[in-house]
Image (tube, rainbow, N blue to C red; front, side, top):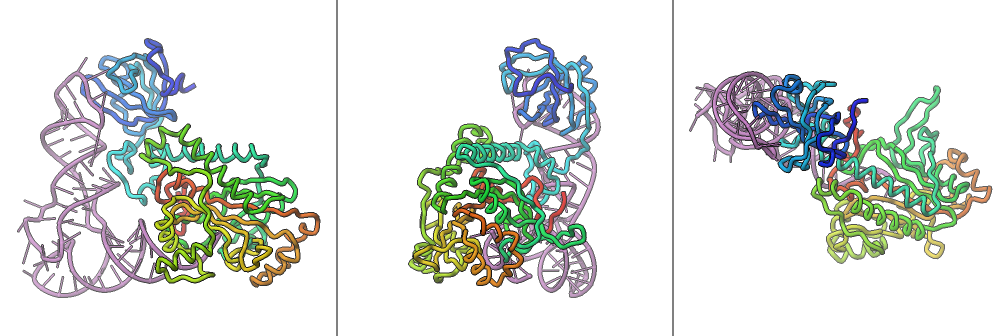
Length: 429
RNA sequence: GCCGCAGUAGUCUAGCCCGGUCUAGGAUGAGGGCCUGUCGAGCCCUUGACCCGGGUUCAAAUCCCGGCUGCGGCGCCA
């Protein structure tokens, strides 16, 4: 056993109790005959005092910042101490000494560039800010799951090594699968649709890969996709679930991660029901009225979304009813207006957080949509055949977790959110 | 991939426009010293750097060209 107590659990009521704490040396203030150590563990940072004429004092000469140590000592309440309580060290064991100087300042006096931070990532992740980000993400994912469970969803796991491209377009990473060509999944799309045809309400939180040239603060080669798919439902039902889930997540974070948000000096945007909905056509007309050169059928790229966001004056909004041609083959067209699809994007300021739609559930429609896009129906037979056996109407959404986390943390780059980001140039650490 | 900006000690930054005064300044870290309540501890001493290659010039961290790397915007992408 390496410790008797976590730092956060040490209280003034434990006065005179002998305890053992373990963690990292966060800071040392050496006053000569007395040293103040800030010790950090998973629960926080606490003060340890080392006084002359103790065994600990001799051992303290070997301390360096970020060394992993175990400290036995006596709890003493003292209003001069940061938490009103501190540990008077009796003995210190250096479990693992850190080399110095550190390639990154964990304590936070000297800010590092993001490039340095990602290279020295583990030390970066020990910083208070990143600890907050990690904990906020964990809590966000927990409330995502809980809210979906509450709505009768079931968590599933789909294959990540796949035989064909799901949607065309995006570049896939090839892998050699027992001598055959295969790919890393760019999305669980087709499999979650099939599973909705068996389980009705499913969700998955898992990795997805895209071998794109994209080099922006919003793209990763490997990202986490939070996917939802529901049977006997359309895109309005899914938007309702998304709305409800995101608001639940925001409220939970306000409740349970206020300290972490404080650390990040971030205030969550006010998200309330209903999240604004604007049709693609309205968005185009709005942009045109603002003098943007754009026509029906054009994509809403980042510059256009920035303009739209300024105009709408709302942080979070749905853009719905996109042109059918701009959407993947599985997207259902509107019955009364086939050039428009039953689809939506959830946008945070100018960033697409999620994309969803009602899905085609008739085989002949799917085959036709594949053909229109120049895709070979034969390659999709593993998917299409199940539409012969009672595939219900269904709808779903894919949410980019790291992007969503930008909204929940105030960070500006998904590479900061991802613990070990993969991008065009980064494969290690 | 394109455009813009940048690359100075382990880390962060000043200097660059207006070449010499730079023996390259500061912070932080590290080594040493003083200090019994620090809380970004303080004070003193020491330590360590101009991305690579070419060019202009009496002289290049500074100007020019090429490369590499990074950051931002865009593109590609959902």
